[in-house]
Length: 89
Image (cartoon, rainbow, N blue to C red; front, side):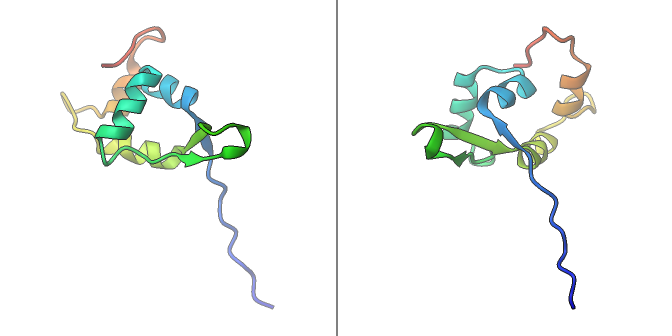
């Protein structure tokens, strides 16, 4: 009998969690969705409401790592080093 490979579960993030991770507003995330073709595309869930969307965490992480680096540090590294109340722009 052949064993099937177990695929790891992909974690989904709400728009609120994406905003918290990026330290930006919901409006900024919506603008990125419409202007930046590389920004992760959300998955739509109509059961909880017509506008309910979620993002795959791994796709967001890949997008963050591909952002231009300033001073040798990636966006993700700079966000982790920022004080808890600071917002990246």
